[in-house]
Length: 149
Image (cartoon, rainbow, N blue to C red; front, side):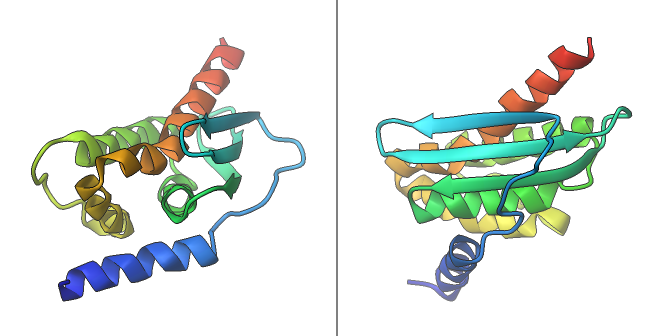
């Protein structure tokens, strides 16, 4: 096991044990539930999106494996305060990293923590655990868009 693998594992465990933006928004713009019935992962995502399309708040509750919880925690940090358009770009970048065979370009910058999840690709059955929060977020953003039309 390499030093970088140890650092990535440490980052995932940190986000699992102390998930960021954990909790509930009392009056959210939208609430979305994501479930992976194959492994039992569950995630409820609460979003507040301003009229001008900025993610003003995000909270989540997650139950299941460490990958699901850590991925949701990292996701919430990455998109908090971003525009909906930027959040969609981040989602696509993350999904490309997770679903592309072989190595992809390093994320860097404010998305660097997400690199820790790259190792999940070694275990294809766990990729769905990492993607559940992101797919749930996409559904939430779609709900917000539908409600504003």
